[in-house]
Image (tube, rainbow, N blue to C red; front, side, top):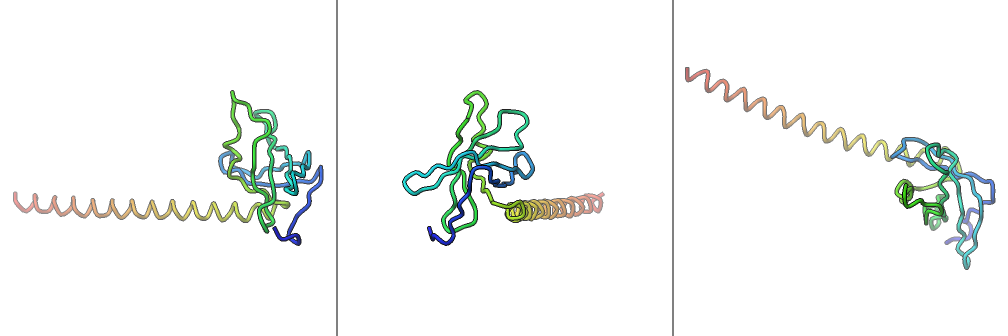
Length: 142
């Protein structure tokens, strides 16, 4: 990783990430910094968990990017697993930086939904046209 792009967080700093499953922006606080042979890992804790013990995650900075990626779940409960909420999540140092990729994802999903709906409308229009033609043929026979 380019040393100029390394972001050094400290205990108490915040990271932000969008959770599409729970539908919102989440804030995480750095609880510990681990230097594992030059690989800096951050132990972060979710500040938005309400229905269970706050998630503790291990994240690291993505290569030459101003984003952090999930590495592991630190306090997963086998009876109520949480890792699947986080395993593909990206984390950013500012709320606005976290919003941009979230909005891009929303936009992509909405466009895909629109394409699907338009395709379904076209199928329905073809079905209607075919049924009207069949109705006309039958009407003309009697």
